[in-house]
Length: 127
Image (cartoon, rainbow, N blue to C red):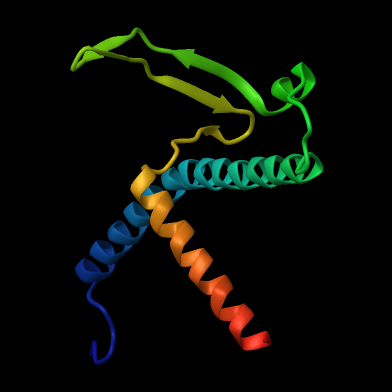
């Protein structure tokens, strides 16, 4: 009687399937750990950058020490001419956070207007 029991063939198939899955999962662990470590490192680097930035929020001059504290490297690309004007890309790679690309002027304007309007509404509520 085999009522409620697996056949030997089915048991063997399930065992092989389980062992294969375990091998795949064990093989994936180092990559997942590396990804987690990299993400944790990036978060820690960003936190250190924010802490450094808070230390120098009211600068009156830009000194070489401050530049070295925040900037890892500056990459200046070769110039291009467009409509008779010279354009040159300058990438600033910041310590701990890498290359930061500034938003487009239109986006900055929208963000500023949204911030300005929210401040106006706060002033109206407190007045």
